[in-house]
Image 1: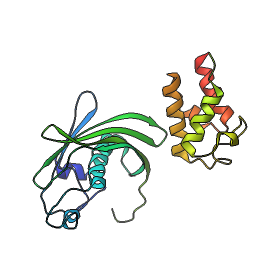
Image 2 (image 1 turned 90 degrees about the vertical axis):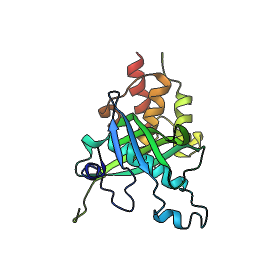
Image 3 (image 1 turned 60 degrees about the horizontal axis):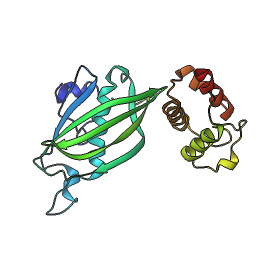
Length: 143
Length: 78
């Protein structure tokens, strides 16, 4: 699934669409990629002359990969964070890096979805954690 | 086997951020403790993992009191 196909599923748009490619394997594990170009808005002040992708943005990259796991339930819905648990940041994410995300759904009940996700670069773990989401009706008028 | 009610109350207290002393079997999760839908699902998830059972969405949706969730878990243990 490429960026245009991802846009058919996720409501996120530039500059906050943070998944370039995604596949789901036979075990229903999502494998996604996001290339850090260096032009992202969040790098301009984080930090001047030393751009590093903020941890919260790494969580968002993982979250969007998780949301794609729910693609069959996403029509007419928005995914909102409900919790971020046990997140650890192990290594830095820099411009030029391609983040590789692995995400799996570990629990679902009512409109709550719980996923485990990891973000790595070249096999080196940068971030990991458990992310929870609620699916709510998308009531936007201009989608 | 029956659930350990003190453990259930401890899990609920920890998830919602209240004292265990405030919790009885008659305590209502939402009305008395201020729980939201995520709290109820997270409590359900924690108890399912603790007792290795699975509550249906219908069972979880019907939970109002602490006693309800204890009974729901017990129904899968017996």
